Figure (cartoon, rainbow, N blue to C red):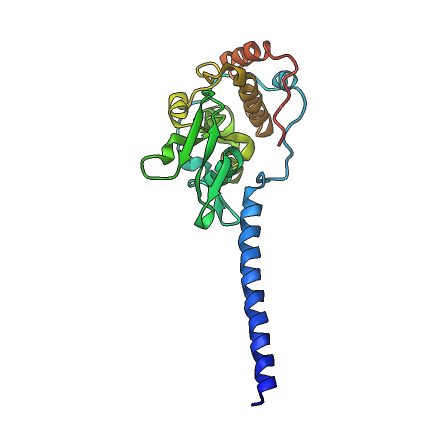
Length: 234
């Protein structure tokens, strides 16, 4: 084989190697970018406008029995989007300066916690990951007792994985909230209460859930202190 032909083959092989590496890097970046975007789990747009105005449209009923409630009624854990589970998608969205490792796992970042008003330095680990948890703003058991029993399993899974419904929050505050509604639990960070209630209203409207009388009255009290509170932008 001539020296010139050998050089050509080596050059072609080098180009092929560079091409493969570029494709792999672009594929990895595209996977994370897809997952990091707000997840459109269905074709419905989030409600828009004033939280107080939308609250007036929600039905007011008593709680349905909690019979047959289980977390699995809303899907078996977090949904996966583009290879990334929703916990890591929301961590990437809500933490400042997130550091991402293999498999889209968020390794660290800083959370300005909406529920307590504190700053949390998050580090992934067996003893530290729970410092920041992903809260279902409308607790799933509350959703179950206010209309979600009538939703299809697929629709309930969409609810449980909808970024509109999810917030990264202080783990202890999330545990304290448990399955409380606005009548039984509000964030200690009072300036955030208007946004918190507005998000609950948006979720309930989007998934055709109702509110109890106590829940409705609590939401009205909160919104009375923040005239014109808009609904969260999706």
